[in-house]
Image (tube, rainbow, N blue to C red; front, side):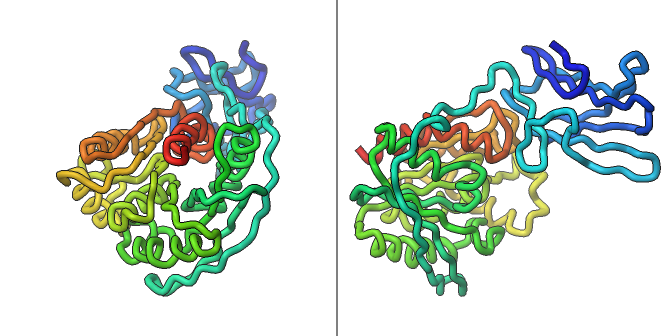
Length: 339
């Protein structure tokens, strides 16, 4: 049923309607990585309206650009109360939030670990969650603070362990530091991660087991890059919408200053004869620019002896999409590696 104002989604259409009884606005435009378009004014409704074919997603994050005559502003939809950060969110009828959001969480504690990084002339403070039971299993996440804040990785961890869906493990959240430099296939950062971060974390947690590395976007690229260069530190990888840029798919990214370094790395991986295979799970949104290069990487890693699973998620390049894919995809990977 179409609302008087706000947004709606059917099996074939998405629609948006913004009230403007006095017709004060000059124009309205939908802004989204998934769909865009200009509204038209309907005198019979005294509202601006836009209808589009439904993209291949179960939810849509969007904003509206309002033309006020002489200036414009981009805002969340005032008639849609559902938000993700500063964007409005449209849920389609087939969207479901993860069930683990409603599970009780096991007890645990957070503490900080200071990590000097001489290889990149830097430092970081990792945030570490440990369950209130002994374990030597470790998961390490790039972009850790945001993975926890927006992707709810800490909540997922405590909920899945608490429900008995996963064995206990420590969760290490690594801040991104000089993200665009460190996460763009940097040999120095890979050396820092393998030579400085992981040994210090292992000593802090009293374990000698290799870790499961987690990363999204550039963070996923950096985790695979580190594993390829320093394989002994990793028991598995969970990579979401990773930035495996290739010229055939990603020329729109060529303005990024480390584009060529990423292209060289991904090219070497795809062309390699074999590799230091570990279990790896990849997820990517159905409407992402990164989908084609992720499919290429999944095929290449499978050919190189990695135990690969690949899943398309009906969403775009955002934290909620990555959160929603944690279960079953990270769950299955951790069961495989930890059990």
